Length: 405
Image (cartoon, rainbow, N blue to C red):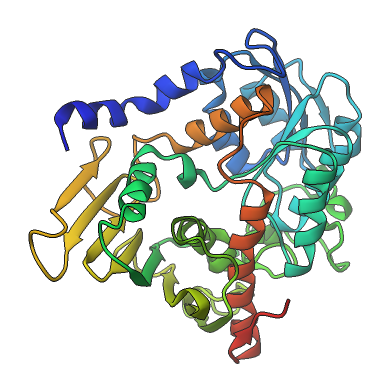
């Protein structure tokens, strides 16, 4: 690959964001798109860093069940923004054209459905669903209300992953029968300790939503991803990113079965979801197996995905791709594209590409021009989440989980 091509790809994130609004229809390019934020905790604050690079986008309202999050979001976004703990109040506002949803998982579908019915376009964090049964309702809400829904699996808009997609589709590595994915971290999130969080600042009942009634728990409130009522652990929080890429690259939907193993080592007696997992997902009609492993006690390999083809292997992480020949060193030709300045493999985040910015920009572009399609609509989000849910079903039952239509 030429150095000019590498330079173009490496610098395309900001360039793309700056050009997206030109020539758009729907909302005119110079019209201000007014966005409301629902769920303004850590993930939303991270996404907020991308908003200054999005032309003619203004945050007009914020919603969260926690006072401190509301205050912090207004400081980051706009001190004059409307603030509420009730998402219904935000969705009723005429100065909100679209919403970004970064709530706990169990609220993703209810909030997305309500937003679509209120005539708002939606960017919603992954996993789209908290249960397999929610899929049809959220797809119907998107389609029946003619809304633009983007699910936050930002790897679909990373420039090097788009290049890797083209290589795979061109047959560069031959027929793919096996995919290996990892998301390994060495992070201590297991200490409960005493939390100074003031329960009076939290609307706990609203946080619970449809979850079973239970007493306020500061640790669960902050670490909800690892409790079944609110999240789905490693499979729904991390694996879902790579499974979305696998489904996209190989034109897959839900797996036929999942055989999973999950254990509680570092998080024993603290998390409900396991801290060390493996799953084998089978797609027999497409003759594909997908193997995923994840842990929170070692970061070997970090976050990566390997497509293992009959002619070679395509390695992807969030900062690079590599093509590794298999049978004949001349076919395929070894190649690599590394974006940014960090040479390490498998990191959660790199300085380039700015995946969040690209993914948000794609959503904004499609909101402005309804003839264009988002990279990850509700259908794709439901598909990726279904694999994670099936993997969790296998962990919780101790048996192979089989897809039921």
